[in-house]
Image 1 (cartoon, rainbow, N blue to C red):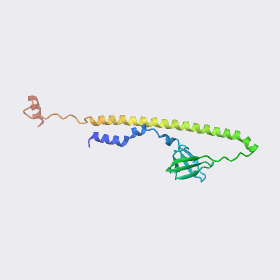
Image 2 (cartoon, rainbow, N blue to C red):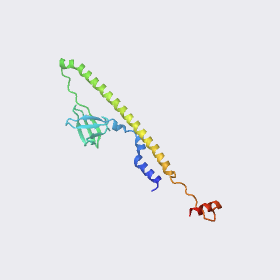
Image 3 (cartoon, one colour):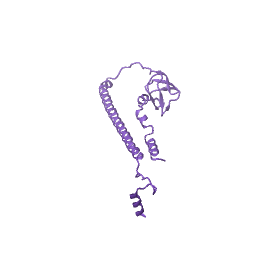
Image 4 (tube, helix red, strand yellow):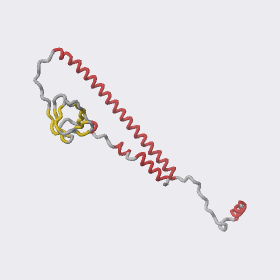
Length: 183
């Protein structure tokens, strides 16, 4: 194996399809999955809660049939896709207790704080991901430069040039004299 072949083999082992992987964006359907809890207690992931949405249970397509959420809404699935969405039946409004109404502003405040904290966490995660992507891109570029240098070295001659051997008849008088002194 020549040095150049070795460099190419190492390059393929290290880089492989790295450039393609860095350029490939994460599919939107992977990013947009939301989790919903069923009445049975199981948790399903749904990319969009409408007909045609993808439903998974434990990483596998949800079994065919009707699935009821905790709030009473139902979906019908076939092949891991939503074929029908049934909204929860709304019970008639009953007189609400005054004490419960007094607690609502505090509950909304808590929810707003929770949403603000979640938004901050998401922003921090996006920044971390962007920083990691930049680091990986810099490392990939550094590796490319390193392999360019290795290729240059591999293609360069390391041995001293060999002098052409002359026959005794081709030598000049001085060369014949020097050659006879070495014996």
